[in-house]
Length: 359
Image (cartoon, rainbow, N blue to C red; front, side, top):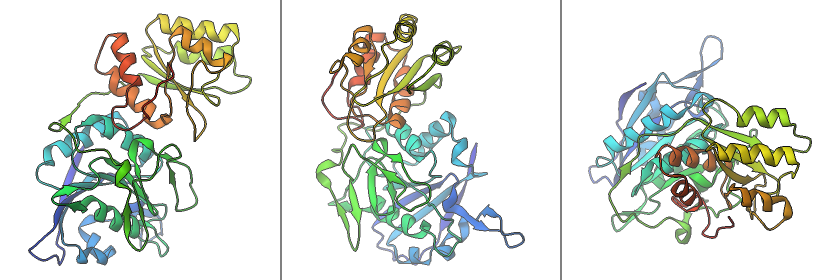
């Protein structure tokens, strides 16, 4: 996995206000139509200033690192997340902010993963992308890129306004590990139903500074490992013992995100509870998240979740599935004792959950 570097020559004056590293991984935002057959192909980022001439107005020094070759976000994996974290680590002191151009399908997973890997992050890491390629007439790519660059360079008295991993899309800035892709045909692709937007972009960019993470208390620490042996089990009416058993007995499984109904409720069939209990006894960590876009898991509030709490299933409160998967990967990779693992999964590490716990 390698990147090639492109320096962008803007018309910015010598009194630049910030320096931004743009990391292009792939996705719709960097696609243009091939002149021969009109198929979509990645464009040369050395020509980005011609595609987005508005960038000439920035008082910002910009550099692009482009993944060679770019990849569709459906092919993003653990190794890409770790590489992105390493790139930010190497360049952290040279730039004031980072903009990651990424396909929309797995952007919320990538933003969540980066939020956990980058401990004590004190600079903006802004993910953005597009629903329509940058080479098309009605593209949203130019607007998303320009605003993401503005946000990544926004500061007051030398301090960045959003020192955390975020997703900017359409008109809203969302905490990365609170985001979910909810739309594939319209420009408002991402939503954060369980947490307020960090900013809204209209005529001006209005920052909601009261919900932004505070500056870190220590230096950046970049983690280098994630545990990939995790799975998702989505509960549905009529779910069969064979299906549940096949997932829980997957070779090497270390952790499971279980998407349950409402406030964390699941079937109370004896076979279902027995399979979960056996998995926990074998050392598999199970994190309970709600299928609802809003609300939270409250294990023990109803009888149908009381049994889960009693056997040791961990309540995820209001965490999203994307954040739950990557948080589980992050914590399991540390090889901690089970009680410490359980404790960390219930703690608010990077703003991914609210403060209260329900078991």
